[in-house]
Length: 192
Image (tube, rainbow, N blue to C red; front, side, top):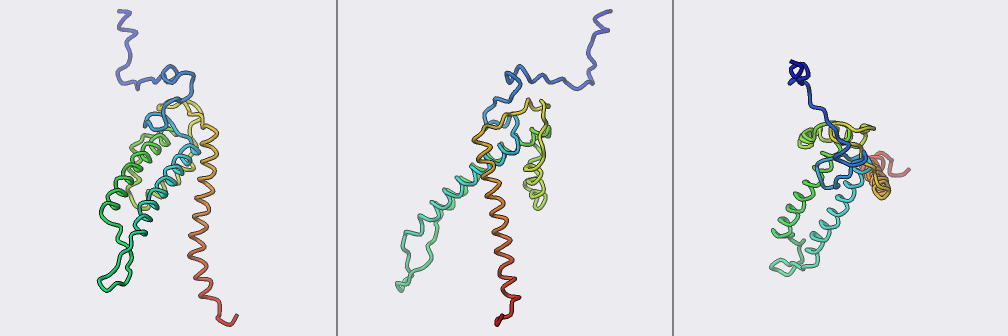
């Protein structure tokens, strides 16, 4: 009879004990694992690293085609054709980087105790922009949550994350300037 009194309620949610699994109360998982958590600066740092590597590879693949001279039948030079091999290489690279970015954003969702399935919002136009801002600015849980203990952001990730923030701000200012300067110049009278 005493055994029946101590039975567990089958409708009670399971309790998660994360401390023994991660040893010492901090997330020790690999950055490339979808298990674990990423703080804001870690997320921005790894996104910056992916962006820089992606742009360098794209410039190398696309730029290498610029050195292959191409001419029309009459001998006039034409813009180079980047070719099918380059397009396939860029597509494969894009898919590879997308996988890593999804892993990083899943870990970021875990930091504020949300399921990684929220990343499906990244394929919805306009909603993906709002979701990205949410990933960048949402504060993570201070203590352990359902996805594990917090991850300590290494110093190098903090530095690269701050550089990433500066690059984002510079790009936004550049886009605004590229739009605003021609509009301003068109509104100024020619003799002024």
